[in-house]
Image (cartoon, rainbow, N blue to C red; front, side, top):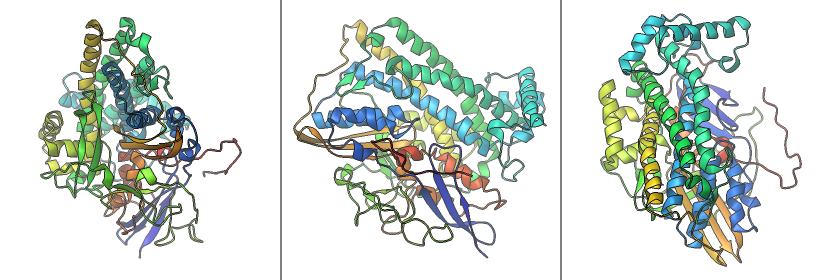
Length: 557
């Protein structure tokens, strides 16, 4: 007999997400519904204002992805104004974004996603000497690796357990059969979990050096940047470089080796394609390497139905948002330039379940050529691999060789997690080159950081880029010198999308189909796959009152 289970809220994410699944008699997921439970409204607030107000406002979509929305909005303005920033501004933006990527991906693996792979209780029984041997088997000089350190970590964890106050380790599914790491692997990775708590602040400091502050940086403007004195100060550039090397060292000696360890333990799930999802991937391109965005570090394009032999070019005109199963008014998919954000809440059924084929989420359903697409690090690496991107191919092929796994393992939850780690390495490998490029420009006498521009009476523009969680687009329409329409399609909107008009599930939903739960009371496998996307519901759905009045109270049990 089938049963339905609801996980609400999904924790260790940004925002409010509910997952409802239908299980068969063998606890295999046969259907799934992804639902965001808070409404989005910031796009409506920027209407009627000076377009230059938008970037500082829309970065408030989220408290994590602030720079991502800030830059995308600036790019939309520059497209509408018909202006390009000078080379130094492009480079500084890349450096801020690189810090965001490295920090975000490290934090995701350890503090948001790590406990889906790691059983903390098993680390208590590990042999510290064997843990050292394991760490050295995947890297010649692993991060913070010694018997003394691992014993100290065990004592620290034991104090947590004995005190009864588990803090971040509370309420997990310890002992679940789906945990597969050895005690020593658990100890190595949880030790880096604790190390990453300190390391993560380094990336935030890097962002603040050129961004002014973190979160919500202040140094971008249409046409360039405002952090001129920092760019021209060798000491400030040195501060960035010093912190960058510390963060890169952690990525190379802790993060990547830990993912290799996890891949060895969970390779059967990767080979089985658990969590693969829609297997169609879309990228806008990110980290411009020239002032015209003709070449980008991260790829632009699409791969359809897992066909990596035939990558396709991206056609922006084929993007639309479908609201067939979303709590909004409307009767057809619309391109963002003409998109609307008019709420129409209908709720769930009397039992609190999804109402069959009706509306069930505040998330819209972005489509490309009418089909759902996954975005994010896995999408970028699959598209890049399909296009023959030399650095991406080297990273993927090297990792596959080290693990003895085929390329098809990428189409899985494990592949999605590994792609994020490899992307962190890709960005880190290029960031120092951007620093050198900036220094070289300044030495050659090029100190330009801004191109003058004005608000046109009428125009439209889009800012399409790649951010840690995936393809991000902001679209603006200007009339009479003010914003007439504003729409944003964020990565988690693509991935959390409900069914579209044709009834095709979005990436979250499709990725859960066929997943077997070891214990229906402990849906670890569902959470592991959802977390692999690094959900950011706050970006996908926002709520705010311009008069600061109370709108709704929520009680989370």
